[in-house]
Amino acid sequence: MTENEYLKRCSRCILPETTPNIIFDKDGVCNFCRSHIKVQYEGEPKLRELLHSHRKDSNKYDCAIGISGGRDSSYALLKLVKDYNLKVLAVNYENPFTDPQAKTNIENAVEALNVDVVSFKLKNNIHEKTFKHNFTSWLRKPSPASIPMMCIACKLILPNVIKCAKKYDVKCIVTGGNPYEYTSFKRELLNVSTDETYTKILKKSFGVKGFGGIAGEMLNNPMYCHPMCISTMITGFLYGNPYSFGPKFLSPDIEFIDIFHYIPWEEEEVLSRIKKELNWESPRRFSSSWRFDCTVSHLKDFMYLKTLNMTEKDDFYSKMVREGLITREEALIRIKDENKLHMDEIRKLLDSNGISDVSHLKMDKEEIIRKEILAE
Image (cartoon, rainbow, N blue to C red):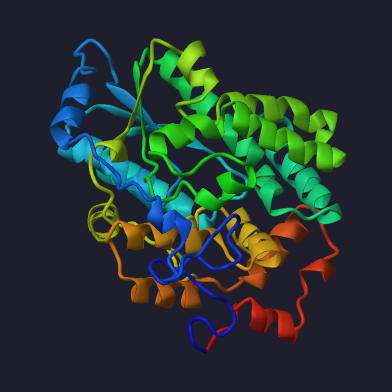
């Protein structure tokens, strides 16, 4: 199968013609490439200065960090302990949808680095309940813009990390999200501008425009407005990321430091170090190590392929191409291999949450070919 046999893609990155609001020029270059602003890092010296300003002999911990067992949070924890010699409190949310390998990775990291870890759960099975409700709501009226609603309970992680930090008098919370995974097309679906620096984009995603986009989706599908989900959605909106209203105004005494705002995210180094120094692994049954730690990601791949003929990986690798981290040819090879559905994982997820009718997951041969899922 040739790269454009079924989908036209940008001639510079790999975004397909199904990307929301995409426009190609006469040379086949998309508007996202033309408006791309390269990531500007603030530098490791400034990062060290900020981190070391929070070192106190009188405190048991200098900083806190949320860990999931995925590659980026594991690497950030490694950097804090080994490279910056900080006393770190690791905080783990016991996500009911965590892949077993991610749990093993957390255990290995904690042991290798000799750090304390505090774990917490959400009360009343709210994560499972909101996931089931929002997914069944989505099935009634599928929309790519509302797919992130599957993960609304994950937005409750940050306030709990803040709670743990306050308990131990920690004034610094480090995060490890890399700048290439803030997916552009999801913001386009909510009418949030993407032609700005990613820090400004993060602020806008949970600003007035972001709220307006989410509210519009809820009005379009009132099933999302179930009382059980409303409080979770409100808290999730307030604490969507460290730049949103909750952390900024309700925890002004805590400084949030995103490690990859200061140092480059380099995939090869990240994977090399955590594998060697933390005995970190990704499941061999998956060809990608990105976001494997949550099993809901496989279902979201299906939902995006069903509605947009693309996944978040198309966007992620397109950003890496624009930044010169990988070639366009390598990106095409990756998505050909990785944009495949793991139906066994999806069925297992739905069965475990009492969603037994999986007839809606079936796709005929023509649709499979058209979506390039089984590309050979």
